[in-house]
Length: 369
Image (cartoon, rainbow, N blue to C red; front, side, top):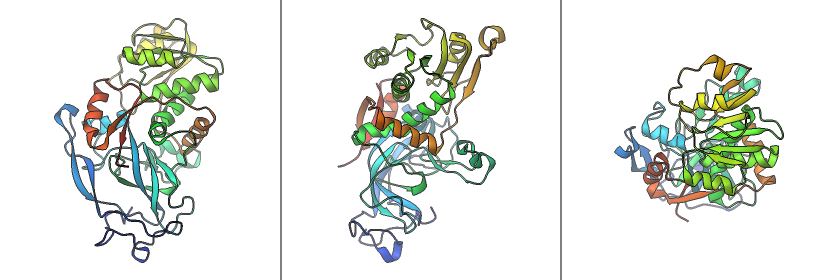
C-alpha cells in the first residue's frame, strides 16, 4: 500500500515504466488523476451528516495490488457503524464500502491471478499476517493484525479502489453487478454465521432481523440444508419478502417461533434479542450473533436461556475460504438478491434509510457507467 499516495502523472495516463503496472491485455488505460469520493469526516449520528464528499487522488496499486474501477458498491450496516462511530476510528477520514464489484484497470507487476478487464470483487477482509497461530490453523479471521476495507483502508464509496490481489474475489456468472455486490459481505458473513449456528440438514432455523444478509442466508439454508426457516423481524416489508422467498413462518422480532429451533442467527444489532432467541432454542441449540456491533446484552437467566446445553456464539469476520465457498455456492444455486439502488452521490441518504429500516433487501450504490 506504500505507493497508494502517488499520482498517475500530469495527464492521468497509465505509465508502465513509472508505476510498473501490467497493461499487457488492453494497452494503456485512461485513468483520471483525481476522483470524487466519500469520507467519514466526523463520526456521529447519520442524521448529523458525518460523511462528506471530497476530492482525492486516484490511488496507484503496489506490486501485488489491483486497481478496480468501481461499478457498484453495496451498503452494509457495518458502514453505518463506521460512519456513526460505533466502531472506533481506524483511519481518519476513511472512505467506507466493502462490497465492491468492478473491473481491473491496472495491476502491479507481481500480480498473476487477474488480468486487465477482469471482473473482480473487494470484500471486508483485506489483510492478515499469515504467520500467527490463528492464520496457520485456518482461522485468519481471528488474526490480531487483520485489516478491513472501509475501516483500515479506503473502500468502495468512490470511483476507484485498490486491493491486494490475494484478497480479491472472482465472481460467479449469472448475476449482474448490482446483485453481486451484497454477496461480498452480506452473503459471505451470513454464510459464516450459518456455519457457526451448527445447523444440520433438515434442521429448524430462526432468523432474527431480515435485511441484506439475512435474506440471502435464508435462501442458502433452504437450498443447501433443506431447513425449515422461521423469520422474526419488526419490518412488515421484510416479512413479506421472507414469505416470497419460501420461509416456513414470519413473526415479530420478540415473538416466539411456532416450533423449537435447532439453530438461530441474530442479524439485528439488538442485544435485547439475545435472551429472546436463546429461549426459542431447543435443547442443544445454538445462537450465532452475526453482527460486528451489538448493543448491550441483558443478564441471561441460566435455567431458562442457557441450560440443556444451549450455546451462544459470536461471529468474527470471515476467512477467504468462507468467501470462496460461498461464492461457489451462489454459482450453484442462483440466489434471489433483492436490492435497492442509489446513485453514488447519495450514499449518505442510503445509510440514513438503512438506519431507519427503510431498505428492503440490500442497498447498493451505483457509480457512473
